[in-house]
Length: 451
Image (cartoon, rainbow, N blue to C red; front, side, top):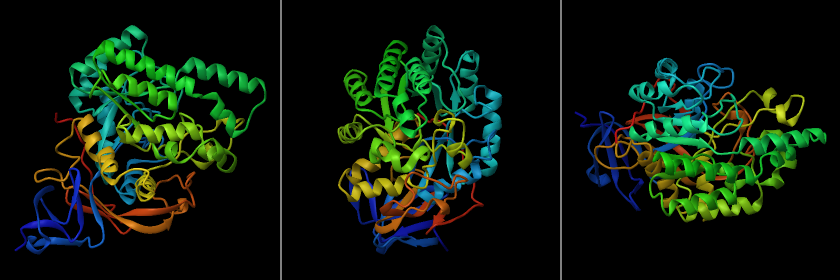
């Protein structure tokens, strides 16, 4: 009789800051045993991970699954299938849908939809916008993983509350020990730049880059940090894209230890201004991808701990929305990232741009701790959820956007030669992806803060 549901043998397992040659077993969705492969318990399913690395399940704290409200772009089924295919075990879905998650009824409806479709585990953000102060506590009670505030125009155009209301709302979020994620760009700077560029007849991809300069990010990051200090609300700076933004976060972290976190994305670490000529509006994203100098500064911020997490800002649109429209400013910003992120970052590990240990902390332990789901998730230890991203660090392959599980079959990384890929994705002891084959019948669970 089997004493475990799943056992993974013969792999190298990333535990804390070391990699050990051990086996891991799961029972009832939890890690039940860790030890020698030769002593592994009998299990219903055995995965032989010889030659592979077993990582804690990758957590992506920044995705847009467009469901409900814009399911022609993506939905929980296709988006979480993309996550499973890419090696991501938990996703946190953003609230800026056409049906925004700005009140408890919308959150409950999204929860209902996700429960019926999601393949991997998920958390749901509440929107912080003008006039919804009374909904903050009900959304917290319903289990919102955190909140999101947009300081500048982006998909959906949801303005932040006025300053006094915003501070009051952040205080309420802080008292409840939730974290506020901020899209930090200065709206006035961007609007003026766009107006000036349009008046000059600019309609090239670089016009988008010029409309969202590092000055816009720096101003908004500084303001978000000031609001965090005043309100004592744990604050997260989403998708850092510039040297100036990283510098502002680095300086603030000296006095806001643990209360200020930041993420960046593979596109800001691997692409720069020189790529616009080739990739065009497919590469358009908010904030804009910037210069080689900014890219190098972000790598420095990753290595010194200024940037805590790697996320994707997975933001699918239809191909027509990406490539057509009266001007570059009318074309959609964002592109899919769930199926490329793990492979891109493993490529960076192979290139020695980031250590394996640092990558694991940034994609598992750090997000789990910041969003209150550690030690349930974020590390490999007995009693934790049996979430694993099992990877082949030596696999050479090319990213093919046409093969994505996402509804968005394009990427600025289409054709990119990667070294490293997810081979198995395991969610609470269940293999949801095996060598590219996704178990579409599995259902993920909503994650609520536990600490």
